[in-house]
Image (cartoon, rainbow, N blue to C red):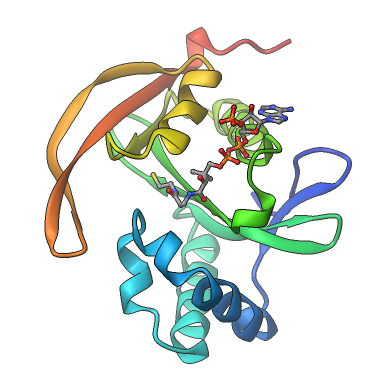
Length: 180
Ligand SMILES: CC(C)(COP(=O)(O)OP(=O)(O)OC[C@H]1O[C@@H](n2cnc3c(N)ncnc32)[C@H](O)[C@@H]1OP(=O)(O)O)[C@@H](O)C(=O)NCCC(=O)NCCS
């Protein structure tokens, strides 16, 4: 599915192995902020971990098993975006995302989710799901902005910094997606 041209200046593209140092440096610089909501940050200790992630992502994409790529805006690395298979029988995909703090407040993730959701429905998927901790309002405002429906709360759906957190589950169905 990658690269995805989200708008004139924003692209989601596969990581190259050479991106490992850059990816790690952005995660490391914003470690405290990102680790609040992203469980994998505490397992990212060095560029080698980012390289392993990039190789894992390449494998997933190669086998058609979702994708994880970098968000580049005007040529600047701004964050990460992933689409991971949820229920195969339900033709359902889970989206995940993060932005460096300086890239926030510009609608980038909302635009990425809009573009990816449309593409997934075009490929025959029926459900796109976004799950966010109840305290992560910046995150769950994204699916709300796009008209996703709050299905309910997955109780203790994620282990985050040593404690289980609930997850608000939002979904969009193919038949409800505005294609104009
Ligand atoms: C979750 C996260 C990606 C949201 O970032 P964000 O910048 O708020 O989201 P968007 O890129 O969609 O931008 C929306 C903001 O830009 C504003 N905006 C500006 N232009 C816009 C446009 N054209 N379209 C939509 N929103 C726009 C919106 O008003 C909104 O700001 P507000 O909340 O102050 O009203 C970010 O907070 C983050 O990286 N958090 C840490 C990691 C994380 O929590 N990941 C998700 C785990 S579930």
